[in-house]
Image (cartoon, rainbow, N blue to C red; front, top):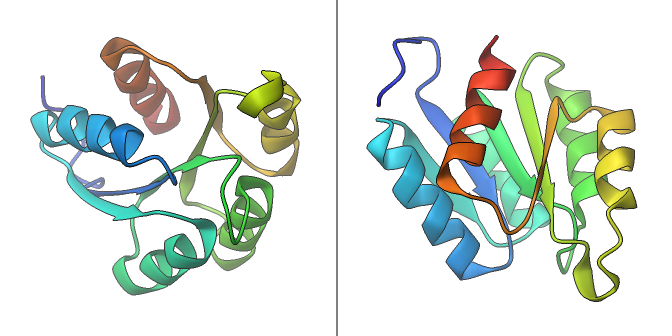
Length: 128
């Protein structure tokens, strides 16, 4: 199941939901990626600067710093990093966040809840 892409080793997962982070971590580790985690955009940006991941997977609705702001700041620091935005739409189930994420720089979007294959497909998609 591991990818042969040797240029990608680290993936940063930013989500305030520990279960989502754990799910992503388990799927990505099976694919032989090193997974770095953060529970909000502020900590995500710290980890991004410290770890220099090749892919960032970020939630849209989080405390402290939301996904749109996080994506904008990551894009400003590194135009080449691949970004996957994910959202369940929050309490309103409003998926406009994902459309906005694409407009400001996300390479792909993922609706929560997602299946392992969908996450794997999104990773493959950004690596093309």
